[in-house]
Each structure stands twice: as C-alpha cells, then as structure tokens.
Amino acid sequence: MLIVAIPKSASTSLVKTMGLLHGLPAQQKFFKDAPVPATTKLLHRYHSDIREFNSEQTDVFGDSGQFFKQHIPPTDNNLELVRGQKKVILLRDPREIIEAYYRASKKKIHKERDEFKNCTTVDEWHQAACDNGLFDDLQWFYDRWNSEAKKHAEENLVIDYSSLIADSEFVINEIEKFFNLSISENVSLSKERFSRTFSFSDVFSALKRIIVRKK
Image 1 (tube, rainbow, N blue to C red):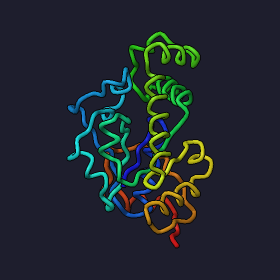
Image 2 (tube, rainbow, N blue to C red):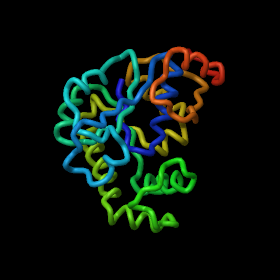
Image 3 (tube, helix red, strand yellow):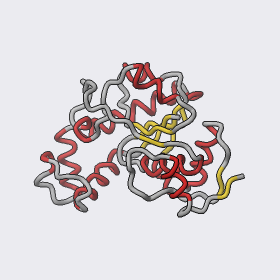
C-alpha cells in the first residue's frame, strides 16, 4: 500500500502509525543510483527517492501486505508507472515545508546545506529557496500530484498535512476505508523518528507504548 508524500508532511509518522495499527511492515525505499529527474533543480539532493523509477521498483508498492511511503516525483514516467495503483497522496503547502526545513536546520536535525549557509532567518530561507529552485521543485510536486489525483480520483486519496495533524484519527480512518482495512479507534499519530523499516518485533514492542482499540 503506497503513500506518496511531499517532503516534510509527517509521512514518517503516518506510515509508522499505519504499520503499528495493522501489524504490517512499513518502510521507505531509497534509490540513490536511479536517474535523477530532469525536472528537479535541488530536491533530488535532499531526498534519495526523488528519482526516475522503473516498473520493477514500483510494482512492489502495490503489495497489500505492507506500507510504503515514498517521495515519488510526478514525472511523466513515474506517473505512468504507478497509475492504476491505489495511492494516498499526502501534500503540504510548499511555503510551510521551507519553514520546516529551516526549523530542522536550526535544531541541527539536518546537516547544513550550502544553498542556505548564510541564511539565519525564515525569510532568508524563503528567499534562498525561491532563488535556488527548491521552492519551484516543491510547488511542482504539489501541483502535479494534486492534478493527477483529480484526474484519477478513483485510485487516489488526497490528504492535506494540516488535516492529518488537526484530526489524525479521522484522516487515518479515511485511509483505512480507502485501503479496505479495519477501522481503528483512539488513534494517536506516532511522533517517533523514522527508522527506515519496521519489523514485526518493532511493531509489537511499540504497541506496548501506544494504546489502541480496534473495532
């Protein structure tokens, strides 16, 4: 089951929560050696799944026995490859994403980026992002996936970051309905950092820390 997410949209928390709730593996795959999209200016340097995919790589995302969250760039090639798969599309305002990168940099969660080396305020980050192309990359990601979802509404569920944060249980229940999963109650969105993959032992140990009742 595939969650296509724009960066900095709480997709890590979402996919981990889905895995915990349903006792399924949840992961993000990385493709550092795959071709970089010709359409991106900077985003591919920040996320190693901002790549051009092939059918062998994307076919696995349709596995109903596990969850995937990927920052799949909406190139013509990639859209064609995942068209026909049911997908949750998680989006966030690009301006908010720049601010999230800024906060992560200030907290030293991310390494310092040369493109923002002399930026000390959020306004300077916004200006630099407009100048270096990062904002354009994010806006393209947002607009094209939003457009794709509208054209093929039967196979795409669009979720907004603000809705996920404001009413996590409602949004997660909508995702569960979309993927024909059992509906969860008393859901809390996981705040733990993403560890790339989660085994069944990870799931059950984490469930001891999260009280969830299922219908």
